[in-house]
Image (cartoon, rainbow, N blue to C red):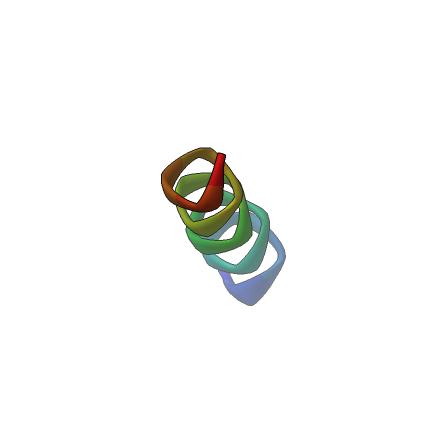
Length: 18
């Protein structure tokens, strides 16, 4: 579960920072 939640969260943060 974490393996899927972590990448997702990081992706959202990355897009938000961009």
